Length: 442
Image (cartoon, rainbow, N blue to C red; front, side):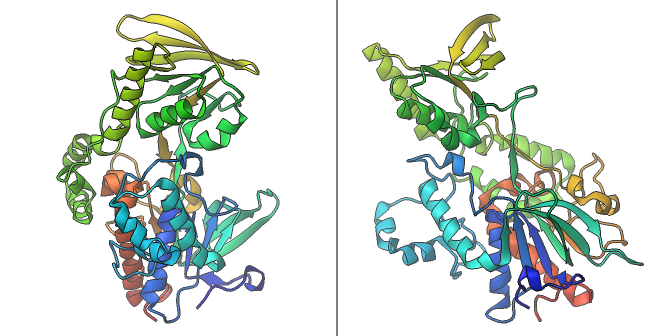
C-alpha cells in the first residue's frame, strides 16, 4: 500500500520497509522498489533523512570537478537499462541529451550528477521525511520472535520531539562520516574538506592556507583554493613524495564489477585482504592523473615566473597546530630529516577521508541478536542482510559498512543499482516463506 501521511498513522501501524538515510543508496532502493511493483500497488516504505533536503557531498561540488565513475553506473542502469530514473532519462527530461552526447564524455560534472540525484529524489518526496534523525532501533515488544522493530526518530533537531515507527524490514544507509586526525577539533580555522564550499566564503583575503592529505579530495581542495584566492599561498602537506595516480585501467576496474562481489564474498579471508591490498590504488589516497598533471604544470609555471604560491610539502606531516581568532600556527616536520618548520596560516583544511558508522551502535538491543564474524564485525549475508539468531525474523539490511564481506564497492556508486536490486529480491523471496514480512509481489 502507498505510504500514509504520518499524522494519520495508527500507533501500531507497521511499515513494510523503513530506510535510514536518503542518499544515493536508499534513493536507488526507492527506485528499485517502485519498479519492482511494475505500476501496481507499491510497498509501504518510508525513509528518514537527517538533512533538511536532499544533498550529496554539497561541500565538494567544486566548479569543474567531474565524476570518477561512468554515468552508466547511475541509480538504475546497471540493474534496469530501461529505467525511467537513469541518467539518460534525466538528460532527456532536462533537454540536454543531444548536447551531452556531443560532449563526448563518460564522466559528467559533479554538479550535474548532483542535479540528476535531486531530479530523481523529487519523485519520492512523499516517502521521505527530511530533517529526521534516527536515534534508536529496538524490538517491537511482544512474546516470541521479533517480527518487526521500532525506529525512534527525532524530528527537526528537537530533542524532545521523538516519534516511533514500526517496520518489518530496515535498510541502513547512513553514509560516511568525515574523519579528522586524533586530537584535531573542527573550528572556524580548522575544518574537514567536506565543508570546503561552506567555509571558503568566510575567508577574507587569506595570506596562506594549508591542506593536509594526499587523495582526490586533497588535490581538488588544493586546486580550488589556489584558483579561488589568487593572492594566497596554498601549501599542500602529505607524507608521500607525490600524489599517487588512481588506477582506473580497464582490467583493474573489474574489481568494481557485480560479479566481483560474488567472488569476493566467497573468498577466504586471506584472499579478501590480498584483493583489497592489490586494488587499494583504485579508490584510496589516489588522484586522477589529469589533476595531478595540472597541479604540477601550475607549480612549474610559477617557478618560471618566480611568483610561487603553490607549494607541496611532501614527505612531511603536520605535527602540531594552534588556532586562535587571528589564524593558525602550524608546525610541519620533514620526515627524512626531522627538520621542523613553523607556518602561520589563515586556515587548515584536513582532507583526511571518511569512515562508515557502526550500525551495531544504532541497533541497540537488536544488536544482541546479530551474529558476528570471527574478528568481531557484524556478519552480513550475501543479500546484505545482517545475520541474526532465530529470535529475529524481520530483515535488517546494510548499504555500506560491508567492505570486509562484499568488497571495495561497499561505499561506492559502482554497484549501487545492482545491490538494491538484490536487496529487493531478498525481501521478496523471504516474504514468500515468511508471512510477517512484506510480500513485494502482492
